[in-house]
Amino acid sequence: MNRIEFLDVLMNQPIINSHSHHLPDERHHTLTLEDIFNNSYVGWCGVAVPSGDDRKEIAEWLDAVGNRSYFVWLEKALMELYGIEERLDADNWNIFDSAIRQAHQDKDWHINLLRKKCGYEAIVLDTYWSPGEDNGHPKLFKPAYRINSILYGYNQTAKDHNGNNIQIMHGRSITDIDEYLDFIDQVVLDAKRVGSVALKCAIAYDRSLNFGEASKEEAQKAMTEDPDKGDIKKFQDYVFDYLCRLAAKLDIPMQIHTGLGLMESSNAMELQPIIASNPETTFLLMHGSYPWTSDIAGLTHVYPNVCADLCWLPLISPAAAHRLLHELIDVCNADRMVWGCDTWTSEESYGAKLAFLHVLSRVLSKRVEAGLMDEEGAFRFAKAVMYDNATGLFGVSEN
Figure 1 (cartoon, one colour):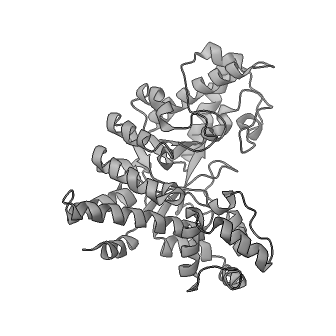
Figure 2 (figure 1 turned 45 degrees about the vertical axis):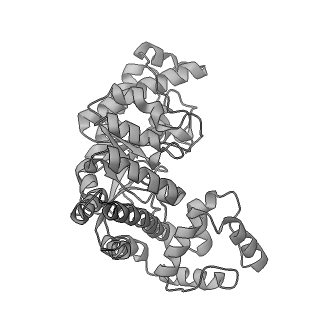
Figure 3 (figure 1 turned 90 degrees about the vertical axis):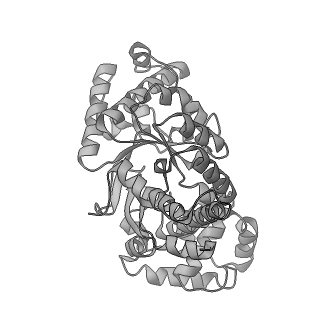
């Protein structure tokens, strides 16, 4: 079976999507082309998305971002989803925009795209704006509870990069570390009771992933009126280790954003000490630690409690995803890889799927051709990464 035939089969394989930030229903009902780009990684490219139909502005913007992987896969998705054969340009911008506006008049369009076009049976959802939500679709969305706000709960003034503080969110004013840990227990237990299937740490957008040892007494110091940076780090180090142990007790994985972020010690290898000291915790390391991708391969090779989540990486760079997937197959068991779209809209989610399957089909077909894997094994591997592994890790499937 050649790569194209293999890709056709994979396109019809159901998926348990390990990571998404899908926007609430009401945000999709009035969606425009501009909205899609602004709520996508194309909006991160440092060039403002055109806010009107000025052809010169659109052409200049397309010249600036048109070769970025973020744009390429979203454009492919839009062309296929809306039946437009020409690539996006200044002349047909309004055609794309009108097609999107018209389709979203159907309030279920965005959900139907996820279910029927993308083939997702369940999606692990990180609603960082309101941790633990399922967007009102509990059969499809399974929450991952973002813990950044817990790491910034040492006083009433601190906030994570999303502007959240767990004490403020719950109307609490705690100054004692033991009381705070009891509070954390209750928050996380409640989150699991109402459906959360993972804890999610995106602290790489706030600080380094270098979590050192810290005592309860050192953590207490940050809960004073004027903690310094050292006190705050000790508090976060202690509380994060506590959360890792709590995840093990509750038998849910700890998802961690690795790579990029602040680019300050955000590579996955910074996590080695805490991974080693928490062997009962399942660590799901996300995004391939780009650009330090071999960190993920090395950690999965050594630590059986580490799994690789390839979400976002194929959108960042298919070339990097291609390299890492080859490495992971070489050094990591087949049951320790998953994939998720890591997107805000159904359109970009489909683009993320296209990018991932482009990489997956290329890698597996090359390995079959080279005699490193047989065809049946390649299909088993693909199904494991796309469905079976996430079902086991998160304990989810369509119900």
